[in-house]
Every structure is written in C-alpha cells, then in structure tokens.
Image 1 (cartoon, rainbow, N blue to C red):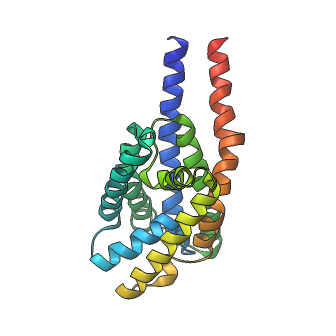
Image 2: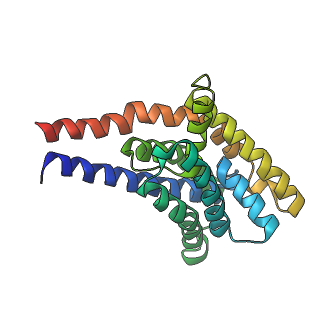
Image 3: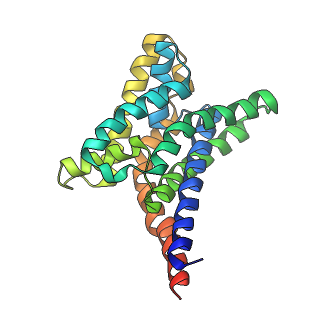
Length: 223
C-alpha cells in the first residue's frame, strides 16, 4: 500500500474513532444524570417539547445546520459529516439502552461521577480526532467555525464554541421548562463544564494528541 493510501486509511480511522468517542460522550453525559453536553441539552429539551425521539430530532437539526454550512464553510462537509449526523444520536440512545435496560446497571453515585468525567474527556477527544482527519465534521461543530469566519477570526474557534454551546444550553432549558420535563436531567454541572470548557479542550487535544498522532504516522509513511 502506498504512503498516500496509508495516510487516507489513517484519516478514515481517526474520523470513525472520533465519532465513536462522541457517541460515548453523549451516552455518558446522559447516564451521569449531571446534565448533558450543550447540543444534546438543546435537542433533548426541544425533542421532549415536540414529542419526538432524541435521535430523530437531532438528525433533523443537523440537516438544517448542514444547509447553512453548505453556504458558509463548505469545506467542513464530508463523509464524516453524514456518519456523524446519522450515528451520534442513535449511538447515544443505544449506549443508554444497553446500560440501563439490557445490562440493567444501577448508576450509583461513583458510576455517575465516572460517567461525567468520561463524557468531558471523550467530548474533547472526539471532536479533535475527526476535525484533524479533515473528512467532514458534524454540522454543529461547524457553527464555531462559521462564527470565526463571520468575525474574520476576531473570535477564535475555542471562544466561538463557548458562545454556541451556551446558546444551546439556554434554548434547551427554555424548551424543557415549557414541556414540563425534568430540568436537572439535562442541565447540571456536566452541562456547564461542557459549555465553558469543551472549546479549549478540543483545541488542546488537537494540538497535543490527534494532530501529532496523525502527523507522526504520516512521517513514518514517508520514511
């Protein structure tokens, strides 16, 4: 196999691993009961209000954002975009179903704390992995890039991500309250950690984990 093909395969692997990490992240946040990530918070709140499954509603929202991305930062669209749109919502549903219904694991406080910490780590790692792969990113992850582009980089990615995340949390809270749902199941310390720290974590993992990992493999292929 040529160096170019090996590099392509490595990028595909990083993209798929990144999306798997995001599935685990969303599932862990939901299982922790300490609040979910910002985008999930919004979609859980709105899906409860409209009476639709989380996975289906998230797919619809991603499709709408994708149209905006197409006309603004089209380079962000790729195979990873489609896989992310379809798989993350249903993947998170699957993880929760397996944990609670199939294996009937009781989420004790230590397990909930572990799930929260895992969610925080996998959130940053997942996005960092598939952004570096450059095979398309989730429509929502493109929102921060759209803000960065619209402000001519006056607002850097990590800060643009904080803005979009906090906005999603506000929307999720409003719709959850209107629907009469349990607010504390979607908003908590995990939501706040995700909204304010996920952007910087993504940047950190891109610079120190996923980026070096991809480039290290590329150097080996060239040699």
